[in-house]
Image (cartoon, rainbow, N blue to C red; front, side, top):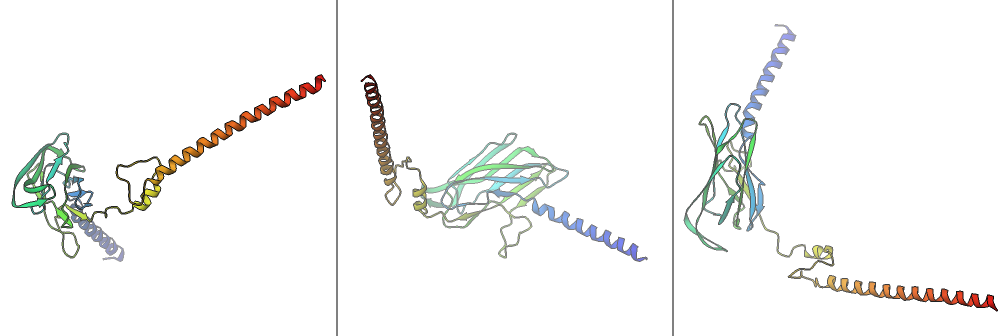
Length: 252
């Protein structure tokens, strides 16, 4: 075998391995995700479950998302998606959970979208508003099941790995971050706020001062205008008197 032929064969093998590697990596990139991927603890948020279609010969026809029951969400509502039917399932919790809104014994456990199609090369987002988010955990996991028209089912339910690497079928994860401390940044906000802005509860540090400043500024402007008007009248009077004196001088 000549050297050039060996080089060509090596290049072909390398290209084949590269294509195979990319082909195996693509499905991992096309998993079901939640967007945005983070929200503040204790608050309400709107998220979208983004579902790309990773098959070339089949359409996605159904998505099932399981909601956590160990940290249930008291309020869940879904946004209609044209062409899709949605079913919200509520169930009794294994153990009642006490929240600031009272004791929760039932909550949404699953939401299913079906009847539509996500064609090859396309994706769809399914929006959900939910809260209040728990304050004692740093993430919520939403296992998802993606069903294709040919009957294939893909379960995106693997929890994050401890070493930070991505599992084969990662579940959508919403990271929860601590809420901003109450009153944080009020100094900068108060100083930057327009003087005409009024609030039912004044910020700390005597926010009534901007209002007083605005009143004082208004009074100063009124005084300046009054003095300016008086000066104009006196000036006109001086011109008239000067013209009369000049005329008298000519007649004499």
